[in-house]
Image (cartoon, rainbow, N blue to C red):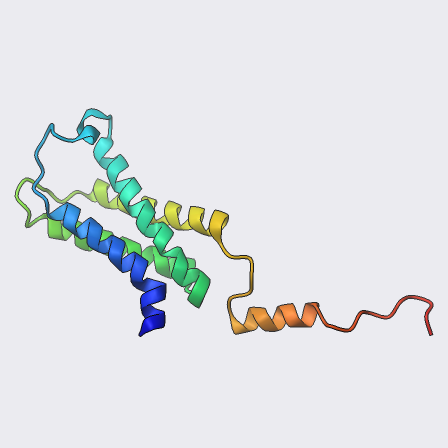
Length: 144
């Protein structure tokens, strides 16, 4: 249980933040993002980009495939859009979901590209590194 919390906890926590924010009634004209062209989509992109970045942990620590993590983020985005259909002043938007999906993919890719640990993370990788970096040096040419 503790390992699962360590691996998936940041993503679950950020999903809770997104759920809370999407539970708030939308009041037009009160947000900074309302003043920016396509500000709503930028907001979705940023929030879900952070979710994507937190989803990099399961990739690093458990080897979960990139596509599976993007799918998890996309399904959460779809459920969030559905959830907003019950919130006064909110509406369901396929374009919002596309921004969510793009945000998850970009956030995951950026986090994995720039912050991925360089040490081996799976048993297979440890075995491969051990085979490559053997403790005995290779024989020198011409030595008998």
